Length: 348
Image 1 (cartoon, helix red, strand yellow):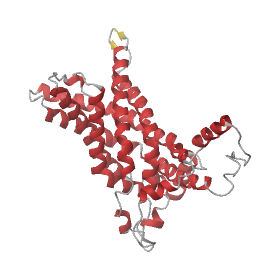
Image 2: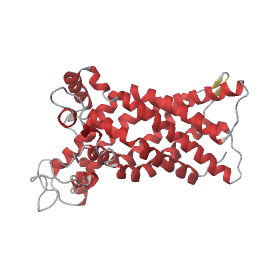
Image 3: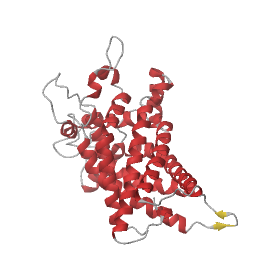
Image 4: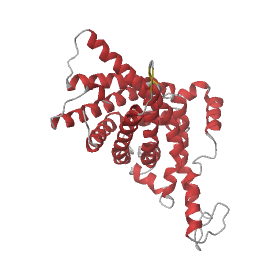
């Protein structure tokens, strides 16, 4: 099967849109469980049980994610398919087979694609997670648009939205490095099992279901294993808004022009550009990832690093299954519409 870049972008975007609408509420609840403000906002003080506020406004911030996910998912799959194809074609052969094992090829391709995707997705992810934490219950004032309220915190420093890039990439790289080799192995095992028993139908429905089960299984396992990284990443993303708000306080800017971190005026285009670059690369949190991890263990024990892990595993199983299942079915359908034969070994 020969897919065009348009096929890959359309199928990836449609898959991402479908998943965002269905599993987004679970992602919101997971973010709130992992937040440092969980006890203050979502737990009852008497018995520490969960209050109803945890389940309100579960679609807050979804708009920003849908807008960014469509191009980021298309970029991911285009890059993944391209890198995987190149690495497979140029993988030297030895007497016993390819020099580099296929799982390594899949990990390298997914990791490269993730770096590209994260660059597009980071601003939306920062907005999303902070919007998910906006108290919109009406108890502290009139209801507001959580996304717009979050964006206002970055209005004087929009480049701060990219400060969470390393945190997002740091979470997604090990996740995809685990998920895609597992996904490919499980898919191959299911196909072999059905081939050996003569029950393989090679239909679009079967292909989509095999992909969904394989992606869901591999994704859920990878999600649980990488939960500690996700917990730290959530805290860093939430700190990005506080960091941007600090930048907007008096003393951070001057009427004469842009000032640097020491308060000295920056003159000239070159200095202004350098200040902007430093601003983007500045950590969104005053604490390092290791410091945040130690703080969580100190306050909540090791189980604190796995807070929301079960929920993350469940929504990743649903999300990954739907995402890759819809993606594979979509691009297979688009290729079939042009009358092209479908090579099952070429899918995802």
